[in-house]
Amino acid sequence: MTTENIILNPLPVKTWNSLKLNEAKYSGDIPTATCIPEVKKIPEELELTHNEVIDNISSAAGELSTFLAGESVLIESGSDASPAVLDYDFTGGKTARLFLHAKDNATLPVSVIMTGKGTAVLEIKILAEAGSTVDLSVVQSVGSGSDVITDIGCTCEANATFNLTKLELGGKSEYVAVSVDLSGEHSSFSANAGYRVKTNQSHDMNYVVRHTGKKTESNIFASGILENDSTKLFRGTIDLIKGCAGAKGTENEDILLLGDNQVNQTIPLILCNEEDVEGNHGASIGRLDDNIIFYLGSRGISPGAAEDIIAHAKLDAIISHIPDDEVKALAHSLISPEADGGEDA
Image 1: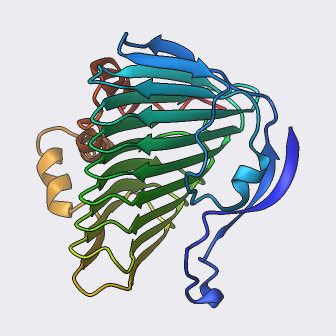
Image 2: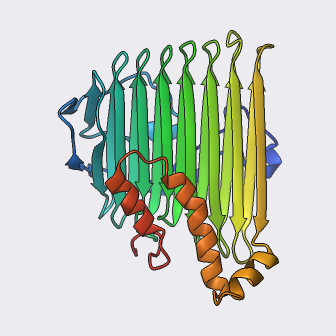
């Protein structure tokens, strides 16, 4: 375990420096111990090997890659496959590296579960070859007193699709970086991200999608709940690069405030160097309507229980995109009123 001061989640292009939102500064432990997952499920159609790395996949995590080393896991698919499930226990503070490779016209569905008490660093790099589909879901319920850093990078070739479902329920300070290169014509990326940031917790996200292929499409949707004294920063960049004629990118965020003294910051950034393209962004933020509280109260539901019901519904919409039924059931249990949204630290 080494203590570092590093830059995480930098914007591709700096905005107003005075706002201090262009990047995140992390001062804390970067574990040197390697976390090897428990393979809960691996279908015969998939090949799993160790200590193999896919190079040249971009990152949105800043300086993090400099500190990553150790044993890695590679999963490859050459055909249609049923979901694989990997369970990472980061107890004691660990780093994990996962690489996914979908060959031409293959499907590769993978669900990742993150648990444990301690600093958790997870790197996932993905290569989606022509005509392939990668479905990745990540359910994060690391201890509520832990630092959590996740770096996901993907390159999509022609007609390839990358679908990401990410559910953030644990950690005290969390940093999420997602970088997607839509380099092939007609390639696409879809993200459904759900988060619940509890009292005195922070959540920092950086999504960067680069459209270089023609007629590419991206859709980023984030839905979250902020509780008392919590902090959240969402950076969402759609980069429409010259030559990507016919490309379309959309990003939307929906935030529910529960309690008081939250800090919510959103930076929707659209960069454009091509004429025949479309970029859209939107965000909504609000508290529970008093009429909803009154309606549920008239049926014997307390204000606190009403908040849990609405929060559960928001996250349930994200969970519906998880391909594996057992992981989906686990996610439902983690957002139930009885759960604390992550293991105790």
